[in-house]
Length: 308
Image (cartoon, rainbow, N blue to C red; front, top):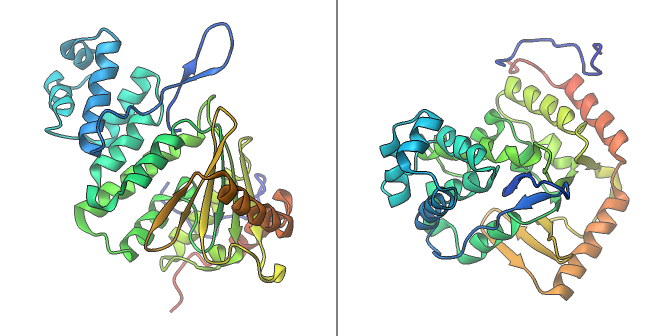
């Protein structure tokens, strides 16, 4: 182990919350901007939000270009829906408007094939923009918020993405990690089935980097990572990833997901039943401290080079 608590390196590696604005004056509470619902088509919704933010800010396209260092005509095309721009541009806009994560979330939806995103998923994205805390359970794949670029690329490629679309989705997923940063970041808890940590990437170096990133994220004050070991036996969420979003008014919604579909659940009785299953899994899981030790042991054992 080295001084940081991580295993000494045996090889070298190359070194999308959404709507949290800056803290308002006086009350110290972060302001939230909810995704507008004027359009149900993701590309048009993205363009409308850009236009609404700029006009509400009293800024002309030319002034916006001067302040951010891009040609003002790019922002005009983005507001018309003619182009989406890059993740770097959208991230700069999020920072400029004080809405970290909102525009990146909309950009991710707009960058994808809209036929893949049904109305329930778009509804989930809007609710995620309001969430004050997120709870998650993973069956076999790490949550996108904790993935490294190498992990995201391999997982997305296994799902059939390739070429430019794969590059865009990896970039979008990495941008979404901004959700967990900053003063207004929501609390995030994830329980990882041990299978998630045993399903190593084909690239041994990338897998080693992913485990180290996971251990580092587990040290953040707003992030809790727990591991559900195989020794816990059968459990009630053994076939479905699930997200719970706690909303400002105290209501909780759930989103379940498997390899082929996702479903938003807002009916209180159904959400409560899922929460009961989640609580039972949490009781079986290792404590956060024990979970981090588990991850560090795996990191120590993980090979840096592919086996021959």
